[in-house]
Amino acid sequence: MSVARDLRVLLRFVNFRRLLVLRLLSQGADGVYQVALATYVVFSPEKQTSAAAIASAMAVLLLPYSLVGPFAGVLLDRWERRQVFLYGSLLRALLACATAVLILSPTPDWLFYVSALCVTAVNRFVLAGLSAALPRVVDAERLVVANSLAPTAGTLAATAGGGLAFVVRLVIADSDAAVVVVGAALYGGAALASLRIAKELLGPDRALVNPRLATALTGTVRDLVAGVRHLAAPPRRDAAMALTAMSLMRFCYGAMLVMLLMLCRYALTSTTDEGLALLGLALAVSGAGFFSAAVMTPWAAGRLGPGGWITVCAGAAAILTPALGLPFATAPLLAGAFVLGLTTQGAKISTDTIVQASVDDDFRGRIFSVYDVLFNVAFVGAAAVAALMLPPDGRSVPLVVTTAVIYAAVATTMGRFARQ
Image 1 (spheres, rainbow, N blue to C red):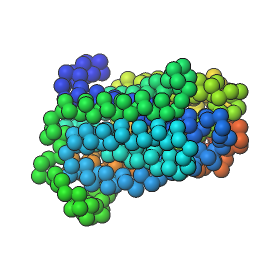
Image 2: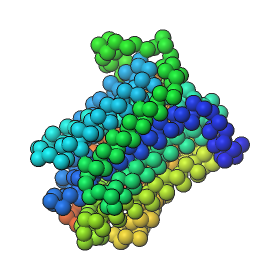
Image 3: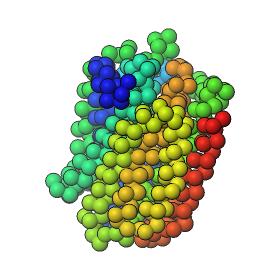
Image 4: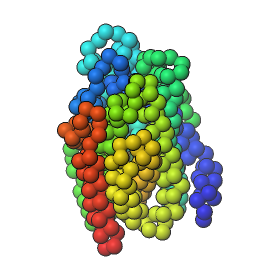
C-alpha cells in the first residue's frame, strides 16, 4: 500500500482526524509561546545575550519540569486522557496570559521563568498523552504511517506557530506580550477541539483509571520501577536502544540550535530585526526537513527497518554537519537546518514506532513520559556544553566537530545493533 493511500485511509478515521486537530492547535500554540520566550530572552534590545544566558534559561525552563515527566506518565496511565487535554489546554491558556502580564510589568526575571515553567510543565502531560493515545484511534497496520503523520504534523504546526509569532512580532506588534496572547488563544482552541472526542475513547482502560491524585502519587515510584523493568526486558531491548540513540541525536540538535541562535544574534546579522528574520527562515527550512522526513520515513523504514533508518539518519548528519556548519555562512547553515530537521525527525518517527510497538498499552504513558524527560535533559545538557564551547559570536569549530563525532557513534552503534 502506497504512502499516499495510507494517508488517505488514516484521514478517514474520524477520531484520528479529531486527535490530529487537537495536536495541531496545541503544538501550534507551543510554537508561538516558545518563540515569544526566545525573542524575549535572546533578542530583546536591552539584553546582552550570551550562550551561558541561553543555557541558564533552558535549564530553568526544562530541568525542573523534567522531574514532572515520570509523574505525568503515571497519572496518564490512570486519568482519562481526553480530560487531560481539555483541562491542560485551559490551564495553559490562563498561564500564558499571566506570562504576557509579567512581560509588560517591571517584575523580576525569576517570576517570569516560573510562569513559563508552569506552562511547559503542563505541556509534558499533553504531549505524552497525545503519543500514548495515538494507538487508540488507528489500527496496528497503519501505526507507522500514523507515527509519521501525527507527530511530524505537530512539529510542523509548532514551526508554523513559530512563524506566526515572528510575523506578529515583526509586522503587527513589536511586543512579545502580544505574541504570548496569540499563543493563549490557540491553547483555548485546543481545549475546544478536545471536546469533540469522547471521554472514554483515548484510554487508558477504565479498570486502570484512578481519579484519586493521592493514590496515584503514592504508587509513583513502584509504577516507574515496573515501567523501567518493562522497558529493560529483552523483548523491549530495541526500544531502549532507540531511545538512547534518539537522546544523543537530540543532544546534537540542541547544541547546533544554540549555536544558530548566537550566530543569528551576532555574527550573521547587524540588527535585532535581521536576526529574528534569519532565525525565522532557519526554523522554516528546518520545518521543511521535518515534512520531508514524514514523507520519506514510512518508505525508508519499510525497507531498512526503523533501526536501519535511524542509522542512515545519524550517518547522514555525521557527514553533513561539519560540511555545512564549519563555513559559518548563511546559505550552508540554512542547508544544515534542513538536514538536521530531516534526520532528527526521521529518527524520532522511527523511535516512536519502535517504542509503541514494543511497549504494552498500560505502560505506554509512563514510557513516553520518560522518553520526554530524556529529550529535555539531552537538550539542556547540549545547551550547557554549548555555553562552555561557544565564543561570543557563536563560531565554534570544536562544537561542530563534537556533534559530528556523536552522530557517527550513534550511526555505528545502531548499525551494529540492526545487523544483529
